[in-house]
Length: 189
Length: 424
Image (cartoon, rainbow over the protein chains, first blue to last red):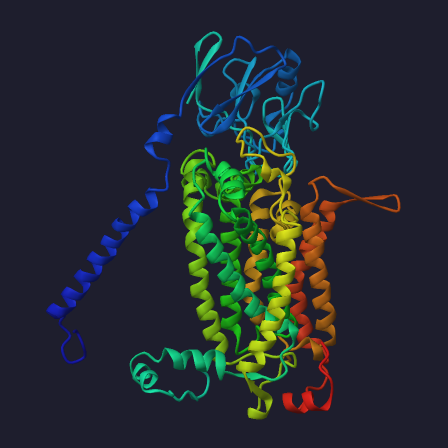
């Protein structure tokens, strides 16, 4: 060992540091498989995309599909609902970001950025607070104050573009990655 | 462990073993001859009850695991049909295990409040208290994992809500929280992978608890028991050996406790349960009102009382973490509330506050109290309750310890016990 009488490092110092370094790096590599095994397996990832036919959905109606284990909301909005969503300035929103997987992260939450075609609103039906499924608001059974969705678990209130307006949820309902494969057909994921 | 050993091996065989593995000596010194304050009351019997309940949960759990199937398609049926109807005495084992969890928490809450009342967390027992808080946290995790296994609606949505707490990290580092929840779930939602890992961890954790309980008892046996007077033992006249004095006292109250436990098992087995958990998990339908098991309701009320997600999660976590700092937040020189008139009142206010928060947590998010025509939203009661909970630990306790005029302490345990009765 290097000490007062012999300031030069010894062979033992070298071996000590080299062994310690190898153990530290080795341990870090050994831990990774044990952590990564908990991430989604290939079988889960393989089922991550679905195709949906929209023909049967009526204006004002919402149909729920299952995608990646979550409900997927497909809502055919009425002109009134679209107008209501477009009348809100982005500055008045709780979450100013579009949360649209088809756009850049920084895209603002204007109604235009929440849809591909204004009539069709496609959302992951999972409340961004703690993961409950919000209830859709219809003229026959209104929910919340903004005509979109209300989450009954902790009272998060969404508008007709699925944007959070009131309550504990921090983000707008997520827009999944999707594309129109035909005029009334979409592929999600 | 404290003091010197009084064990004398009686036979050649035990003498031979004692020189090689002094295990009989350890048991004798820890649970037979162990010197214990002579004035421990009823409230001190719950440590034994807790050890018993841990044993019951492990034994019933191991046999239930022989019949349970941790698969999202089969889990619900394996509990409700196979175990409840087909397996011999399966219904008994399942109800013993499910109600055992509730009884375990009843006992642990009494045990914790007893420690709070008699100042058992104060020097030199800080590490003992902190180990106890760790045991409690491990119990909460174990109970959470276990509640998911029957795969009913509350299982599924409880798991969803609690694991989603981690997504609050998104507000600090974008996407990190979502990555954590995906990692915890092993998918994009609570599903088969989640159920399997929860089963694995639910089986593991009781043994981790047993390990920490070992440390807890070790840390207890270094300074020895606190007692209702909260004064140190001065000599042998203040103490009695653990056996037979406390084996019989603990045993007697344990039998009473078991009678209450079995009364629930046989006559009200679903008293602590939620009817929604008899509906199989459905990821497409959220129950109208998600409530956790009763023992977590106060923390759930705190979470809901904060209208901001990350802050709500931090408040709930902070409520648990505050317990760890208790030994240093209490500034009083006197341990027992018997001699602390202000702390005694504060203690009962705190106990009431916990019950009140629990009540708030059991009601719907938009519940309103109508008191003499005045509408009082319950969320505001929960907010006040949360505020008091934190004020109790971080403001009132440090402050009261400094200004309180305590009553005179007795000379010794023996003098106090022999001169008068033994009230609370």
